[in-house]
Image (cartoon, rainbow, N blue to C red; front, side, top):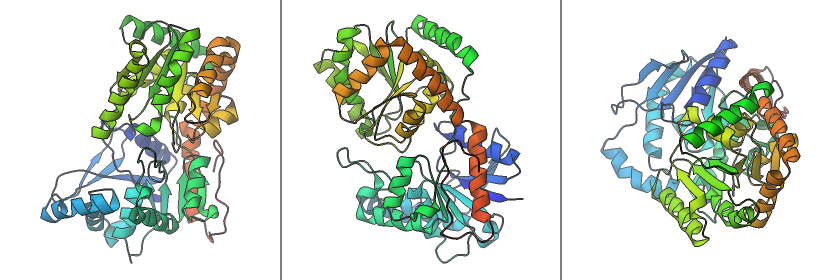
Length: 431
């Protein structure tokens, strides 16, 4: 039986992605893979590693981070030089956890995020005999944007570290063609990059129930006073400047000239001062354009409510300046909502492939307004895009993703695997 240690940095109830990880690992276990999850957490004692069983029946190891004097002294240095204050403590915690005896229990290390996590693994396992590593790319670990000051790779030390990590990994799982291109730009050999996107966080609805579900969600949210009557544009995700929501606000006056009742709903966590400042800037921009009554910004929506909001929307907004994938577009597609997506988001390749919405250039409010108006004005075009969005969501099903990841594991362990092996897989392909 294949044995895998699956590491994700945040596996807890309040994490937006924990459900996706737990569901995927459970599906891999159902396929005969012995998978255990490891994550950062637990009590502060460095010699105490706790384990528990998650709701899917998977063993979860919580690796404690020390909060001792050494960590307190080094955090400031790592924050400046490595853009991640706990990096040194993370390496020490992993080194204590990944003993030779424990590593002998696994055939594969599957690590989420090239930086900081896979890089910390590489440091912790330096000069150790280890199972081969599969590193999954999310986008936020490798992408950089100078305009917004986003990305670990903007610093020389971290960019060099990411480059070495991507060369260290036996196989790199990119979540989109765009992410694969960025991974290759770091010097990772093309033959060690596999494109395998994650599954949609919510099971796609079948065609026979979508219309009724959408109508019910819209009526319920209007009755609850959460949304207003009229065309609704919804963007869900972290409130950070790379999401480009300011461009949608700039496009709103043009959209409302034709559809006066149009409103924008944005929802997502603003975790730090920078994110909170971005939210304030969006509100100020809307006020300066006289659109403040047509913009609502909410905090993070509970996981189970996300489909209701996307089903109530006419269009999902993804005007990103950069995104490795952007799973919110897949969540929207799962309930039949087309996306307006920037070419800088990895999802653009899939939206274009399936015809599940419209792809526009970033930082172009007129193009954004024109794309939105086209689908609001042409209901036949919207209906086609909605049906295509449902087809796109089906290609990101849990079964297809689990089969794809299992195929990567099998390739990783295949006898005679070499760096010249071709490891690309298209979205939806099995194995």
